[in-house]
Image (cartoon, rainbow over all chains, first blue to last red; front, top):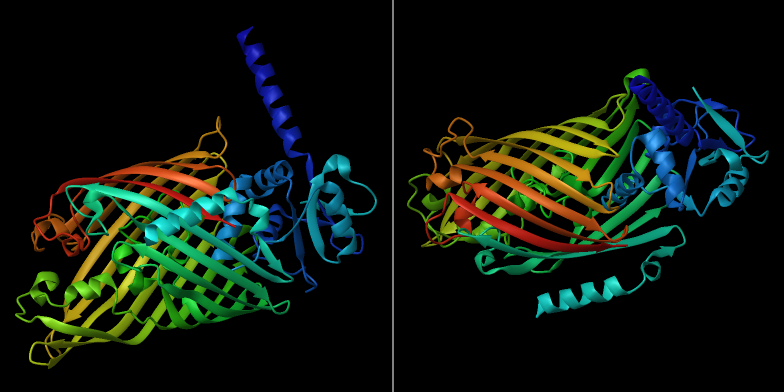
Length: 139
Length: 401
């Protein structure tokens, strides 16, 4: 009996943890030939270490002001809380070593920004995904 | 009076909505910060001769301007006003100012006044809100020697090199000069006192004037970011050379070499949403030659620390930290028998602290340190005999926009 309960608890934990991690997806503009990136690439892009796509064109990371969305994103792709992620960029800003990415209000603003800015990359919840932007698969 | 003004300004800034402060002049970003602390020490004075009575002389103001000129060129500067005991006195100084041209991800150049990449945190040492405790660990980021280590005028290279599945590494190189201002407390305290008091020798000379002529400074840092998210491993090396031109009574001119011949720091940091761990170790070779023509006296100091920070999940914004920080003036002599007084030969600082972030712009900190030993340089702040066992606590608040 106890083993069953334990199994169910572990299962629920795995289901909920994986479903919560799956809610955020990376997006780019429709004209971008890139369709998939690695988690490491995503990390380096949003930490300002990688600034161009493979073809040399300019990479424009975009973040959300929405704290919950950014927290989900940063935990999934950067292994940081939103507070740690913001602190990282403040350190870059106040030492002159980097400027934080553009930030937009929410999913709707993110889709609008990414759809109109060539080379942009951002994140939205999977439920907000539509045909105006392209989902980037994680390899 | 200045302290009162600082406190009033801090209160005013905390009351005004943050949105009114953020300044975005087109592509130019203007940001800033201020902090104010209160420190009280028991048994020994620390960083401020008046700290045993309690001191408000701990504050920093900074205004930072960043402006992208083109896709690859960026310029920026930071003005800093700080007070720490007898240091700074809220004079406004240029903290850093440089142009940055990034050719690609793995190669960029910077020129101007640049912060030194010593350890993982020297470049951000003046921004209180970037760290868990009021001061960075003193074994490596010694506040008394800040002017010797913080920034130099020159140029450097930097970049991030991808290593495919093995992660990537960041590198930084700097070559230039660090000009040590003569109003630094350690310099001022070296005047009108026998040299033997501070240089642990028998020179029967009392200086009346002291000026620094920098020769060159080199700094290099390598930080490896392995595939394990949140882990950083670093190595940095620093050297600064120059001459002190001194005058003693009777206007006798004297040249003193007092250089950091080699300073290396090995660093590791692990940050994840649930906690962060920081550990660093350093060795510093100090060369002193008084006067010219005599052999160098070399002292190799060592130190390091372990710090852990835990964000309390039940209360967003609250984090607790613990730190153990150790420094030995002479790495081959940990009991102080080669130092005079012997208490300046070591220092072991055990600290606990809490930090509460009301929001992303405003925070408060409180911490308590219990310390064994009085290194480095605490004889400069204390006239009488030093106590081996002492303690201090700090309250500090910071605001940034």
